[in-house]
Image (tube, rainbow, N blue to C red; front, side, top):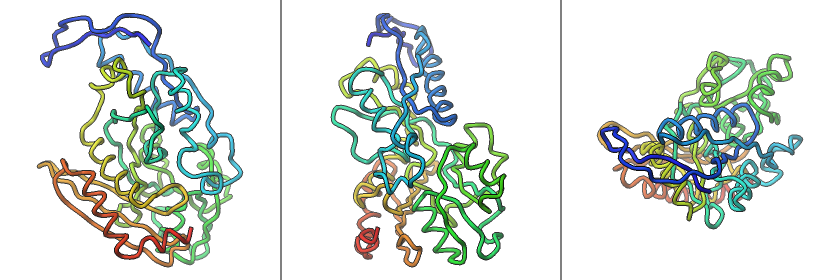
Length: 325
Protein backbone atom coordinates (compact mmCIF):
# COMPACT_ATOMS: atom_id res chain seq x y z
CA UNK A 1 0.00 0.00 0.00
CA UNK A 2 1.17 3.50 -0.87
CA UNK A 3 -1.01 6.38 0.16
CA UNK A 4 -0.60 10.12 0.44
CA UNK A 5 -0.82 12.40 3.45
CA UNK A 6 0.86 15.51 4.80
CA UNK A 7 2.64 15.95 8.09
CA UNK A 8 1.11 18.75 10.16
CA UNK A 9 2.78 20.56 13.04
CA UNK A 10 1.06 20.89 16.39
CA UNK A 11 0.04 24.38 15.32
CA UNK A 12 -1.71 22.98 12.26
CA UNK A 13 0.71 24.11 9.54
CA UNK A 14 1.52 21.76 6.69
CA UNK A 15 5.26 21.20 6.73
CA UNK A 16 5.98 18.38 4.28
CA UNK A 17 4.58 15.58 2.20
CA UNK A 18 5.28 12.29 3.96
CA UNK A 19 3.69 9.65 1.78
CA UNK A 20 3.38 9.01 -1.92
CA UNK A 21 0.17 8.49 -3.78
CA UNK A 22 -0.67 4.99 -4.94
CA UNK A 23 -3.62 2.72 -4.34
CA UNK A 24 -6.58 3.81 -2.25
CA UNK A 25 -6.54 2.64 1.36
CA UNK A 26 -8.93 -0.29 1.95
CA UNK A 27 -10.78 -0.64 5.25
CA UNK A 28 -12.27 -4.06 6.07
CA UNK A 29 -15.44 -4.44 8.12
CA UNK A 30 -18.46 -6.59 8.72
CA UNK A 31 -21.60 -5.63 6.84
CA UNK A 32 -24.03 -4.91 9.67
CA UNK A 33 -25.38 -1.35 9.92
CA UNK A 34 -23.39 -0.78 13.12
CA UNK A 35 -20.15 -2.19 11.71
CA UNK A 36 -20.52 -0.04 8.61
CA UNK A 37 -21.23 3.05 10.71
CA UNK A 38 -18.03 2.42 12.68
CA UNK A 39 -15.97 1.82 9.53
CA UNK A 40 -17.29 5.05 8.05
CA UNK A 41 -16.31 6.86 11.25
CA UNK A 42 -12.75 5.61 10.82
CA UNK A 43 -12.74 6.51 7.12
CA UNK A 44 -13.94 10.06 7.82
CA UNK A 45 -11.48 10.57 10.66
CA UNK A 46 -8.57 9.38 8.50
CA UNK A 47 -9.46 11.95 5.85
CA UNK A 48 -10.01 14.70 8.42
CA UNK A 49 -6.74 14.07 10.31
CA UNK A 50 -4.49 13.39 7.29
CA UNK A 51 -4.76 16.27 4.86
CA UNK A 52 -4.74 15.21 1.23
CA UNK A 53 -5.54 11.55 1.87
CA UNK A 54 -7.89 10.18 -0.81
CA UNK A 55 -11.11 8.81 0.67
CA UNK A 56 -10.48 5.18 1.68
CA UNK A 57 -12.62 2.37 0.34
CA UNK A 58 -14.77 0.41 2.80
CA UNK A 59 -14.71 -3.33 2.02
CA UNK A 60 -17.43 -5.56 3.48
CA UNK A 61 -16.31 -9.04 4.57
CA UNK A 62 -18.77 -11.65 5.80
CA UNK A 63 -17.56 -13.44 8.92
CA UNK A 64 -18.45 -16.79 10.46
CA UNK A 65 -20.41 -14.97 13.15
CA UNK A 66 -22.54 -13.35 10.45
CA UNK A 67 -23.06 -16.56 8.49
CA UNK A 68 -24.12 -18.82 11.38
CA UNK A 69 -27.20 -17.38 13.06
CA UNK A 70 -28.96 -20.49 14.38
CA UNK A 71 -26.56 -21.17 17.27
CA UNK A 72 -25.06 -19.12 20.08
CA UNK A 73 -21.52 -17.79 19.75
CA UNK A 74 -20.40 -20.10 22.55
CA UNK A 75 -21.59 -23.10 20.58
CA UNK A 76 -19.69 -22.21 17.42
CA UNK A 77 -16.39 -21.05 18.83
CA UNK A 78 -16.61 -17.92 20.98
CA UNK A 79 -14.53 -14.80 20.40
CA UNK A 80 -12.98 -14.27 16.99
CA UNK A 81 -16.08 -15.29 15.03
CA UNK A 82 -16.64 -11.68 13.96
CA UNK A 83 -12.99 -11.02 13.14
CA UNK A 84 -11.37 -14.16 11.68
CA UNK A 85 -12.10 -13.61 7.98
CA UNK A 86 -11.37 -9.88 8.25
CA UNK A 87 -8.00 -10.57 9.88
CA UNK A 88 -7.18 -13.11 7.17
CA UNK A 89 -7.86 -10.46 4.53
CA UNK A 90 -5.68 -8.00 6.44
CA UNK A 91 -2.79 -10.44 6.78
CA UNK A 92 -2.95 -11.30 3.07
CA UNK A 93 -2.86 -7.65 2.00
CA UNK A 94 -6.38 -7.70 0.52
CA UNK A 95 -7.25 -4.84 2.90
CA UNK A 96 -5.04 -2.33 4.71
CA UNK A 97 -6.98 -1.77 7.94
CA UNK A 98 -9.66 -3.64 9.88
CA UNK A 99 -12.27 -1.96 12.07
CA UNK A 100 -13.60 -3.94 15.03
CA UNK A 101 -15.85 -3.58 18.03
CA UNK A 102 -13.22 -4.44 20.63
CA UNK A 103 -15.63 -6.58 22.65
CA UNK A 104 -15.54 -9.04 19.71
CA UNK A 105 -11.74 -9.26 19.50
CA UNK A 106 -9.82 -12.20 20.96
CA UNK A 107 -7.19 -11.27 23.57
CA UNK A 108 -4.42 -12.84 21.46
CA UNK A 109 -4.12 -11.37 17.96
CA UNK A 110 -2.82 -13.29 14.95
CA UNK A 111 0.90 -13.05 14.28
CA UNK A 112 2.04 -9.86 12.55
CA UNK A 113 -1.19 -7.97 13.32
CA UNK A 114 -1.55 -5.20 15.93
CA UNK A 115 -4.24 -2.90 17.27
CA UNK A 116 -2.76 0.37 18.48
CA UNK A 117 -5.50 2.79 17.44
CA UNK A 118 -8.67 3.19 19.48
CA UNK A 119 -11.48 5.68 18.91
CA UNK A 120 -12.91 7.56 21.91
CA UNK A 121 -15.11 5.25 23.95
CA UNK A 122 -18.87 5.56 23.63
CA UNK A 123 -21.14 4.93 26.61
CA UNK A 124 -20.23 1.37 27.70
CA UNK A 125 -23.50 0.58 29.49
CA UNK A 126 -26.09 -1.97 28.43
CA UNK A 127 -29.49 -0.80 27.23
CA UNK A 128 -32.65 -2.71 28.10
CA UNK A 129 -35.30 -2.98 25.39
CA UNK A 130 -38.86 -3.77 26.49
CA UNK A 131 -38.80 -2.46 30.08
CA UNK A 132 -37.30 0.47 32.01
CA UNK A 133 -35.41 -1.82 34.38
CA UNK A 134 -34.86 -5.47 35.23
CA UNK A 135 -36.91 -5.02 38.38
CA UNK A 136 -39.87 -3.79 36.29
CA UNK A 137 -40.15 -7.11 34.42
CA UNK A 138 -42.92 -9.45 35.53
CA UNK A 139 -42.06 -12.83 37.02
CA UNK A 140 -41.51 -15.36 34.26
CA UNK A 141 -40.83 -12.72 31.60
CA UNK A 142 -38.90 -14.04 28.61
CA UNK A 143 -35.51 -12.42 28.01
CA UNK A 144 -33.84 -12.88 24.63
CA UNK A 145 -30.04 -12.84 24.61
CA UNK A 146 -27.25 -14.95 23.16
CA UNK A 147 -24.72 -13.44 25.59
CA UNK A 148 -23.57 -15.81 28.33
CA UNK A 149 -22.56 -12.78 30.36
CA UNK A 150 -25.94 -11.09 30.17
CA UNK A 151 -27.79 -14.34 30.72
CA UNK A 152 -25.78 -15.15 33.84
CA UNK A 153 -26.17 -11.60 35.17
CA UNK A 154 -29.94 -11.72 34.66
CA UNK A 155 -30.20 -15.07 36.45
CA UNK A 156 -28.07 -13.80 39.32
CA UNK A 157 -30.34 -10.79 39.83
CA UNK A 158 -33.70 -12.20 38.74
CA UNK A 159 -33.69 -16.02 38.82
CA UNK A 160 -37.42 -15.98 38.10
CA UNK A 161 -36.88 -14.65 34.56
CA UNK A 162 -36.62 -17.00 31.57
CA UNK A 163 -33.52 -16.50 29.40
CA UNK A 164 -33.70 -17.77 25.81
CA UNK A 165 -31.29 -17.40 22.85
CA UNK A 166 -31.69 -14.38 20.58
CA UNK A 167 -29.07 -13.41 18.01
CA UNK A 168 -28.99 -10.90 15.20
CA UNK A 169 -28.07 -7.30 14.53
CA UNK A 170 -29.68 -4.32 16.23
CA UNK A 171 -32.63 -4.15 13.82
CA UNK A 172 -33.34 -7.87 14.11
CA UNK A 173 -33.44 -7.82 17.89
CA UNK A 174 -35.59 -4.71 18.03
CA UNK A 175 -38.01 -6.33 15.60
CA UNK A 176 -38.27 -9.48 17.72
CA UNK A 177 -39.28 -7.42 20.74
CA UNK A 178 -41.77 -5.39 18.69
CA UNK A 179 -43.48 -8.54 17.43
CA UNK A 180 -43.77 -9.96 20.95
CA UNK A 181 -41.39 -12.90 20.56
CA UNK A 182 -39.69 -11.85 23.81
CA UNK A 183 -40.57 -9.50 26.63
CA UNK A 184 -37.15 -7.84 26.68
CA UNK A 185 -33.63 -7.96 25.33
CA UNK A 186 -30.34 -6.09 25.68
CA UNK A 187 -28.28 -3.99 23.29
CA UNK A 188 -25.07 -2.09 23.85
CA UNK A 189 -25.99 1.56 24.35
CA UNK A 190 -22.85 2.48 22.39
CA UNK A 191 -24.21 0.79 19.29
CA UNK A 192 -27.58 2.49 19.58
CA UNK A 193 -25.91 5.86 19.99
CA UNK A 194 -23.65 5.35 16.97
CA UNK A 195 -26.70 4.44 14.89
CA UNK A 196 -28.66 7.46 16.11
CA UNK A 197 -31.12 5.15 17.86
CA UNK A 198 -30.49 5.86 21.55
CA UNK A 199 -34.17 6.69 21.95
CA UNK A 200 -35.01 3.01 21.39
CA UNK A 201 -33.58 2.14 24.81
CA UNK A 202 -36.37 1.72 27.37
CA UNK A 203 -33.84 1.62 30.17
CA UNK A 204 -30.10 2.02 30.71
CA UNK A 205 -28.42 -0.33 33.17
CA UNK A 206 -25.74 1.12 35.39
CA UNK A 207 -22.53 -0.93 35.78
CA UNK A 208 -23.49 -1.68 39.37
CA UNK A 209 -26.59 -3.45 38.00
CA UNK A 210 -25.10 -5.05 34.88
CA UNK A 211 -21.36 -4.77 34.41
CA UNK A 212 -20.68 -4.50 30.66
CA UNK A 213 -18.68 -6.73 28.36
CA UNK A 214 -14.93 -6.24 28.21
CA UNK A 215 -14.13 -3.21 25.99
CA UNK A 216 -17.79 -2.55 25.20
CA UNK A 217 -18.14 0.79 23.41
CA UNK A 218 -14.55 0.85 22.12
CA UNK A 219 -13.73 0.68 18.41
CA UNK A 220 -10.24 -0.54 17.51
CA UNK A 221 -8.41 -0.36 14.18
CA UNK A 222 -6.12 -3.26 13.33
CA UNK A 223 -3.15 -3.12 10.95
CA UNK A 224 -0.19 -5.18 9.88
CA UNK A 225 2.64 -4.70 12.36
CA UNK A 226 5.16 -3.84 9.64
CA UNK A 227 2.90 -1.33 7.85
CA UNK A 228 4.47 1.97 8.88
CA UNK A 229 2.27 3.88 6.43
CA UNK A 230 -0.86 2.69 8.22
CA UNK A 231 0.74 3.39 11.60
CA UNK A 232 1.43 7.03 10.68
CA UNK A 233 -2.05 7.55 9.27
CA UNK A 234 -3.72 6.06 12.33
CA UNK A 235 -1.61 7.80 14.97
CA UNK A 236 -3.67 11.03 14.99
CA UNK A 237 -6.86 9.01 15.59
CA UNK A 238 -5.75 7.16 18.71
CA UNK A 239 -7.56 8.10 21.92
CA UNK A 240 -5.30 7.57 24.91
CA UNK A 241 -8.11 7.10 27.44
CA UNK A 242 -9.81 4.43 25.33
CA UNK A 243 -6.46 2.72 24.75
CA UNK A 244 -5.80 2.53 28.49
CA UNK A 245 -9.29 1.27 29.27
CA UNK A 246 -8.97 -1.41 26.59
CA UNK A 247 -5.54 -2.43 27.88
CA UNK A 248 -6.79 -2.81 31.45
CA UNK A 249 -9.94 -4.74 30.57
CA UNK A 250 -8.29 -7.00 28.01
CA UNK A 251 -5.44 -7.82 30.42
CA UNK A 252 -8.07 -8.86 32.95
CA UNK A 253 -9.81 -11.05 30.37
CA UNK A 254 -6.57 -12.57 29.08
CA UNK A 255 -5.49 -13.80 32.51
CA UNK A 256 -8.89 -15.42 33.02
CA UNK A 257 -8.75 -16.98 29.54
CA UNK A 258 -12.06 -15.35 28.74
CA UNK A 259 -14.04 -15.77 25.54
CA UNK A 260 -17.66 -15.73 24.44
CA UNK A 261 -17.81 -19.11 26.20
CA UNK A 262 -17.29 -17.59 29.64
CA UNK A 263 -19.47 -15.08 31.54
CA UNK A 264 -16.92 -12.39 32.35
CA UNK A 265 -17.50 -8.64 32.63
CA UNK A 266 -15.35 -5.63 33.44
CA UNK A 267 -15.13 -1.87 33.21
CA UNK A 268 -12.21 0.53 33.63
CA UNK A 269 -13.06 4.14 34.42
CA UNK A 270 -10.49 6.93 34.27
CA UNK A 271 -10.64 10.10 36.33
CA UNK A 272 -9.47 13.61 35.55
CA UNK A 273 -6.22 13.32 37.51
CA UNK A 274 -4.71 10.24 35.86
CA UNK A 275 -6.27 7.55 38.01
CA UNK A 276 -8.04 4.39 36.90
CA UNK A 277 -10.66 2.34 38.74
CA UNK A 278 -11.54 -1.14 37.52
CA UNK A 279 -14.49 -3.38 38.40
CA UNK A 280 -14.54 -6.98 37.20
CA UNK A 281 -16.64 -10.07 37.75
CA UNK A 282 -17.19 -13.62 36.63
CA UNK A 283 -20.28 -15.72 37.19
CA UNK A 284 -21.53 -19.26 37.07
CA UNK A 285 -23.45 -19.70 33.81
CA UNK A 286 -26.70 -20.23 35.72
CA UNK A 287 -26.14 -17.13 37.87
CA UNK A 288 -25.89 -19.20 41.07
CA UNK A 289 -22.48 -17.74 41.97
CA UNK A 290 -20.78 -14.41 41.30
CA UNK A 291 -17.25 -13.28 42.13
CA UNK A 292 -16.24 -9.62 42.04
CA UNK A 293 -13.02 -7.64 42.24
CA UNK A 294 -12.12 -3.95 42.24
CA UNK A 295 -8.72 -2.36 41.81
CA UNK A 296 -7.50 1.23 41.46
CA UNK A 297 -4.24 2.87 40.54
CA UNK A 298 -2.49 5.05 38.01
CA UNK A 299 -3.80 4.89 34.44
CA UNK A 300 -0.16 4.35 33.42
CA UNK A 301 -0.43 0.93 35.08
CA UNK A 302 -3.64 -0.05 33.29
CA UNK A 303 -2.60 -3.57 32.29
CA UNK A 304 -1.25 -4.44 35.72
CA UNK A 305 -4.48 -3.21 37.36
CA UNK A 306 -6.46 -5.54 35.12
CA UNK A 307 -4.17 -8.48 35.82
CA UNK A 308 -4.29 -7.81 39.58
CA UNK A 309 -8.09 -7.88 39.52
CA UNK A 310 -8.00 -11.16 37.60
CA UNK A 311 -5.62 -12.66 40.18
CA UNK A 312 -8.04 -11.54 42.92
CA UNK A 313 -10.84 -13.50 41.23
CA UNK A 314 -8.63 -16.54 40.75
CA UNK A 315 -7.78 -16.40 44.45
CA UNK A 316 -11.53 -16.39 45.17
CA UNK A 317 -12.06 -19.54 43.11
CA UNK A 318 -12.89 -18.15 39.67
CA UNK A 319 -11.27 -21.10 37.93
CA UNK A 320 -13.92 -23.43 39.31
CA UNK A 321 -16.68 -21.17 37.97
CA UNK A 322 -15.09 -20.87 34.55
CA UNK A 323 -14.59 -24.62 34.36
CA UNK A 324 -18.36 -25.11 34.62
CA UNK A 325 -18.84 -23.64 31.13
